[in-house]
Length: 425
Ligand code: HEM
Image 1 (cartoon, helix red, strand yellow):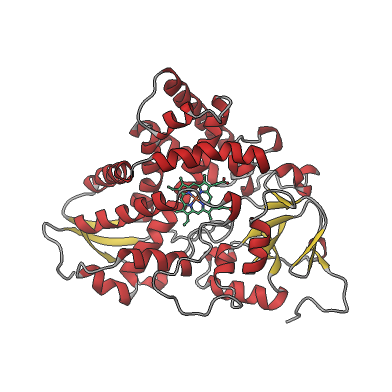
Image 2 (cartoon, helix red, strand yellow):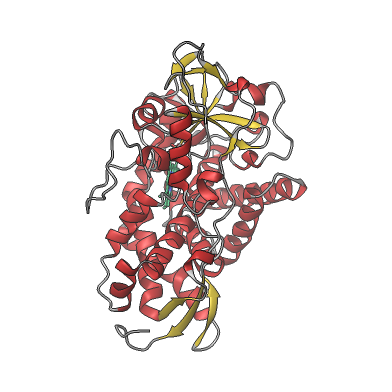
């Protein structure tokens, strides 16, 4: 296999590589760490990949390079899609799935996720303030309610259920929608629209986007007319927001993207505690240290392995020995940097949280503690009510085919309702 860089050659440019590794190889394969390792061996800490066919990008795998891209606020690497050469020149495939996170320039959303510098800081403040003011009890209670509704819906005393579709995905969206104050019916419609938006871009995407936009704007208007006790009302009250559109746009990442992220973390944790012998015996015996399982997932099976909105180079530069051209896209590989052998040995120390599962820098996840509480509650609650065992051998569990999150496509389990806890299956 050819390796790069060779010192006698000029630096490699993205346009020179034709056979590109698909980014979903880092999420949908049985052993993503192997894929990162191969990329690292071949290219070094910054590797050329394709987000999907026809959409090339640099994948930033090195811990040091990751920090160099993520930490400065938009000066050299921007979140603003107007810098993206492919986008500017109209070369992106019409049906690119990247559109789920990167709407056309004309529809540029007003959220901290999509901006840099002062605008980012202004749009981020309400999010940080509202999350800080949110009592843990509210997060736990709302999550418990959503979980309770789902568990009540299961047929009979025992049966088989897909924990991704019937539980993790619904809890992920439902918990955040409840915290924003949506009623369950609107939340369910939005969840279905969100699922369409996250798939391939097409006519249904536009419809789903329109319906979602209307639901968000309508909800904001209702809280502007009369405040309630929820995150939307906190946003409405916040002086940083200039209008309802900014509020609605700032709700999409915590709702749509965060739901995907939560789904992944819940599903991966359930898979780990059900399938891995180190955890499964303790899980059945009621002695599981759940935080240890949650942390292990963040390190080893990072739920968001790749940053879903790339950064775009605002000028020519060199990174990890590669020639980055103005307008190139760079995807941060949280999972890749977590396994950078220059920084981390293979063994996990209990309690070590220096991983990059939450990103870092100005765009780092603002909701770590809330996300942990939702995930923890979802896993605990199902454990209190059901005795579970995998319905298929663990090797048969397939991985979802998406470039951004790592999660099982389905997690079929046998369940049995338990009046008392703590005995073997
Ligand atoms: C309560 C649930 C969650 C909420 C409300 C939430 C919200 C957000 C928001 C608003 C951002 C963008 C911040 C900005 O650009 O200013 C973000 C970024 C991020 N979130 Fe979360 N999130 C949640 C759960 C999760 C989970 C479960 C994970 C994975 C373990 C995660 C991983 C990330 C990462 C990696 C980024 C950074 C992306 C980047 O730098 O490109 N989040 N989150």
